[in-house]
Image 1 (cartoon, chains in turn orange, green):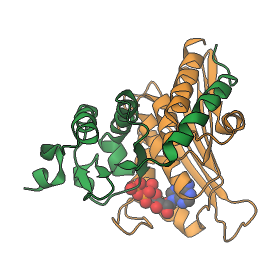
Image 2 (cartoon, each protein chain N blue to C red; image 1 turned 135 degrees about the vertical axis):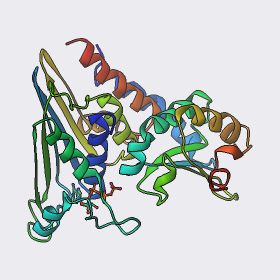
Image 3 (cartoon, chains in turn green, blue; image 1 turned 180 degrees about the vertical axis):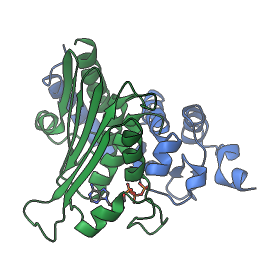
Image 4 (cartoon, rainbow over the protein chains, first blue to last red; image 1 turned 30 degrees about the vertical axis):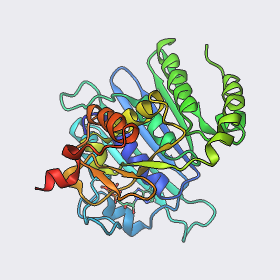
Length: 182
Length: 123
Ligand SMILES: Nc1ncnc2c1ncn2[C@@H]1O[C@H](COP(=O)(O)OP(=O)(O)OP(=O)(O)O)[C@@H](O)[C@H]1O
């Protein structure tokens, strides 16, 4: 991937596919380290699936045999001398407390560090494509932070879809403003 | 500063539009957003459709949506267009620039941009 924000989009799409009512995208950034966590309360995976999910020859999808999203993300973190972890609880084993947490740490000053890129575009793309799912985004960076919670927006909007152009535009500007005002 | 209260205004504005929208036949633009699509550049293509459809005043008749893997990864980014009563059109190796042309010529003008379709690439 050209930008880590594209990996975030890809990983978060898995959360939506796992029917997660809420997907949290949490970025914690210092001058030298970027930690990306994607936490969902979707159907989760069994231990067996989690073990094999970082292996590029594992996928549950039927159209193509290779799932590459998670292995890519892991490799990109490890290339910078960073780390990767995945924890999951499947709905069948944990009916009241299931979901998945993927966490990757990147060393920003490493030559193989891929820039974060346009994370705002990743957030608006997720919301546009999945207006009935909720997303919590928080990016803490040196000197400030930006955040968005679709549950709060939903309250204001009543029945209006989050995918409406005006709403997506508003979210885009709302987030941009938080980055520039910090 | 932008505030959540501004969403109230959007909500009030949308109320009238929703009524207007219900009867109209929907064309559908579907962008593949699996790993293969995202890596190949599907995100800017999706954004170009969202922006362009609105700019051309087509939001009442065209819905822009996302899907997973369409199964032809070597042709990503892939965009499918569904219109009532017509065959599906599959555009491949899409870019934001190509999206602009598809919006103007196909969605607005009713003429398929043949050179971007899978049929033209698979030759
Ligand atoms: N958050 C999640 N919750 C539940 N299952 C997940 C989650 N993330 C991944 N999986 C499972 O792991 C599999 C592998 O995911 P991965 O992103 O590597 O590939 P994929 O989504 O199958 O295909 P693609 O490469 O097209 O994205 C998924 O198909 C899914 O079954």
